[in-house]
Length: 119
Image 1 (cartoon, rainbow, N blue to C red):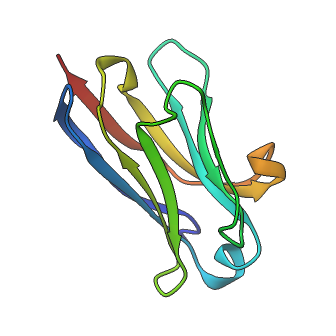
Image 2: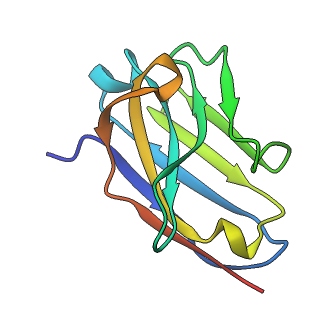
């Protein structure tokens, strides 16, 4: 049973935009904060953005502030990561996560979706 399912990503030109989606069942969406991490080849997985279960609070890594935006749609049990002004250094596998403490604790991981930004 897939608990956290990502979609979106692919190949994007530098300066372009892309949107990632993450869908979860009710028992996860209604009880956990959610967000995104990414991992580039040869690097450690890093935090990108998070949104509280209520949607009242959002958190961003400094490297994506002003370019990425996280949101959640309760009618669809889906969290979105809107990415604009993409840079080659944004190239990574992006993982959706559900957890607490601003995703300091992650209880569920998605399988990841690749975003490649060409220069």
